[in-house]
Structures are given as structure tokens and as C-alpha cells.
Image (cartoon, rainbow, N blue to C red; front, side, top):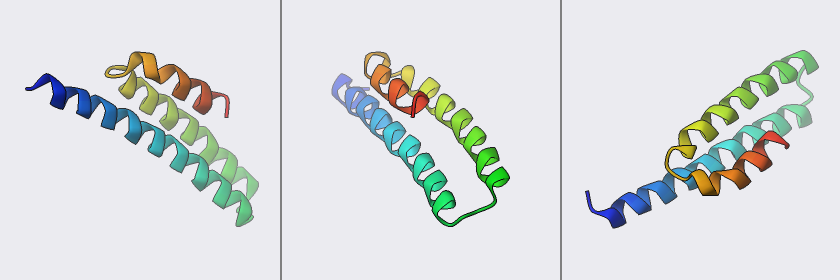
Amino acid sequence: MDEEILEVLRDLSFINAVIATELLRITENTALIAQKPEEKVKKCALEHDRLGEKIIELVEKYRPAATKLLKTHVLKH
């Protein structure tokens, strides 16, 4: 595969990881605004944290240097 195409795919993987992790937080915030039961929101937050970690793990394969900022933002959010 052409190196330029691979580079674009790596960039897109990183961008999609950012979008995915931000959508997880939007979902949590929406649940809080909608006043969902606290225990349900906490359970989802733990699952979202694990999903965020998995997203970071996947994108680190292709953009390890750029992933540092994403990791800091997601894991300390």
C-alpha cells in the first residue's frame, strides 16, 4: 500500500479515536443532565473508562507520539 495512504489512514484512526472518546463523555454528561439514577451513571462511567482505555490502546499502534495528548485528556478527564 502506498505510504501516503497509510499515513492518511493513521491520521484518520487518531481522529476517530478523539471523536469516540469525546462521544463517551457526551453520553455521560447527557445522562447526568437527564438525571438518570446515579448508580447507573456510575456503572456506565466505569465502562466508558474501559472503552476509552481500549480506544487509546488501539490508536497507539498507529500514532504513538500523538496518543500522549489523547491519553492525558481522556484518562484525567
